[in-house]
Image (cartoon, rainbow, N blue to C red; front, side, top):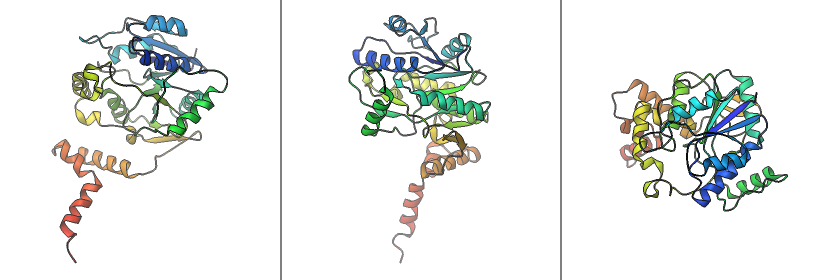
Length: 304
């Protein structure tokens, strides 16, 4: 029995750059200790890539009317076909290194129920990775030189004990909203939301959005509106890594340091809880300290 099962629904392997970064990512997963990999879907080239990389593949994932996999079905298939203690849904363009497994072990020792997430490092890459000796060090050095730590607004993986997330709505993979709901759900259930950014390097290989209509990001896709509806409204899809309850660093859990973005987010949640009759957009504006500063300057700025 392995410690961790990674599961993902890759894009078709028809675009050369997408195919390359997906092979890079999946190959990095197969090199992790005590980990198994499950790929889900019927996308073109997926079965061949799974066989090539030596990972498990299940094609019978349920889809929406447009043929895009449903996250509820992905969770079900992963749960039914894994004996691991932990599950992790992950995007197929994310490179992982052994520090990822260590973070999972540390979180599991500290908490019974939790969700583990982190910020990612964005990385421009144009050729297949060489996975020879020392590849992790070389990659880490190259990533740090590009210095593109992504804002805490997107989540590319969620790692959790198998007992968590038993009731996933029929979210559509690859569209916005569902990842925010994952954090919202954990907060509602009082599970620790653990940001492991200080402990791991999660590397996102940059790509375009040519696989989506008009080449536009998934925020503009009609399926995103369906995800928002299934989440219960926009309030549930505004949760980000800023809403983490703990930070994992040096094998220890601590409360995240209070920063201006975190403070504003807490203020926003407070206003939403106790002033739910106020429109969402107005609450967002009220929670921004910059807006209050402008108001005070407008009122008192010209007074001597």
